[in-house]
Image (cartoon, rainbow, N blue to C red; front, side, top):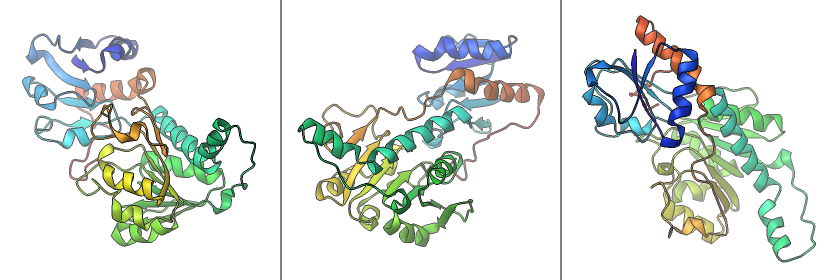
Length: 310
């Protein structure tokens, strides 16, 4: 089976080796050296790959996207019609995201920015002790990533709430859904965590109205997609004190321009879309399994539901 591999140049060889270690019979062709287009039966591609380019391969049977998010697949022109697309549901990706959420929830909960400021000023001052049981966490999105983060926060003793478009239940988590549920949850959330898929319905969901519903002095974490946040609205909320701080891993556009105010804002903690990074040796078994299923005509796993947007 000839497989087109397209990812970041620095990761190309590692991905090739990880796939071949599991299935030496694969013929890996590293983009842009695809060879004869008719030979390509599957494409394993990073999120930045031009979906229109995949229309060059008339015998393509499967596209595997090297990430959990699929918003790049829903933008025009999209992948070739009729070709199934699978995404990664990888425990290492999930663990990485949970670690990032815990890191930043605890950073704000334990007053790390305040203590760093005191250190810079050489001031020895003990701040009031935070109460975990009184710090309410609201999570937007209760899918694979949001659910794992919620369970980890519950285990630490935080009161956790979760919001999704449709009704869900989760042990230890107070669940909300729909527009009314969102309006009900936000005023209760001392720390708001966004782990939603980016769809037309969720684009811009973090805006002046939703930020205004949070308790004054709440914190925001966003590791989903930059398009969820209306950036001028967040900057205004930070400057007014409505939002006390934000940990942001995703932006629109990316890379974030050097002159963007997020870089130097004293209330913003910024990481370069690095909250959870796909590790080839961890994700390769799932990719190879789908390649084998496609070759043998068996049902594929983790297929993208384009109607739902994830």
